Length: 317
Image 1 (cartoon, rainbow, N blue to C red):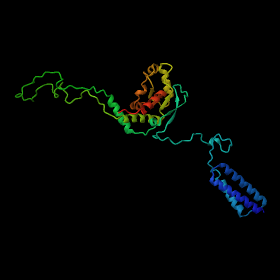
Image 2 (cartoon, rainbow, N blue to C red):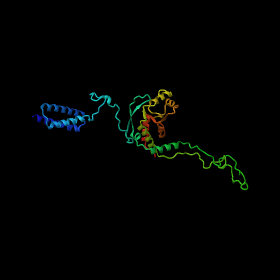
Image 3 (cartoon, rainbow, N blue to C red):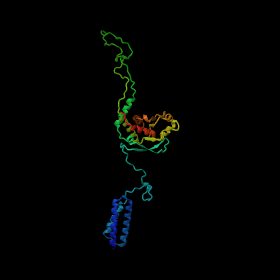
Image 4 (cartoon, rainbow, N blue to C red):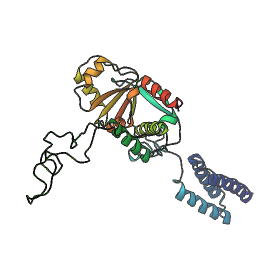
């Protein structure tokens, strides 16, 4: 009778082992281990040592060897005290980086110069999460620099140079080279041949490419974590030292670009005019070259809304 009961217990114990193979919970491991001790005590009490009990002891030793292979997560805050807390790492688990260019809306916290929590704001994915293309950025920057070039360079032609028009010496008989004027390019103070004249260096670039360049620049700053959204850009005073303290609170900020939705406030303008690393722009003047020139971009809520509205406006042909 004792042997039959032990076999029934062995079958139930084998079923628990089968469940252990399908589940990774540490609770099942602990229960199986307790069942093993119970069976051993029961078999010793009945003096039954058959081949089943030897097999059972082998299985129990296998559990003892592998009972630490549980996938349950241990933290320093675990109340059971089964594992020393000083041996557990308190560092946060590193998550996979977000893929850029999937046109997904971004949720970004909103703050202000005093680092106060002002809620969250959703950034449009088709403006702040587009694929990065360096060739588009290169074309837009070249277009901007060429368009802003003054082109006031000028040289004088032979008709514009001051000087006499008479022939310096007779045509033949002097042994010298023949000349008809002293205002030629080979003489000192003479004309410049094929020299530059005032002109525009601007060239045409499609509006779609220009708009895409601005989206890429905004996406790059957002992906780097260098895009900050403020509730507003109001400062309590025009003192420069207050703005210097605000910039010092920002991590890894060397050059700061502040973008407001409407006209720039007089206090903010006075506070930044003596700082070579801080510049202010209205949203209508935001451009690719200015974004790349500054490592941190701070925009107000109004500026973000106006930029998104501008990017969504159909292009007039």
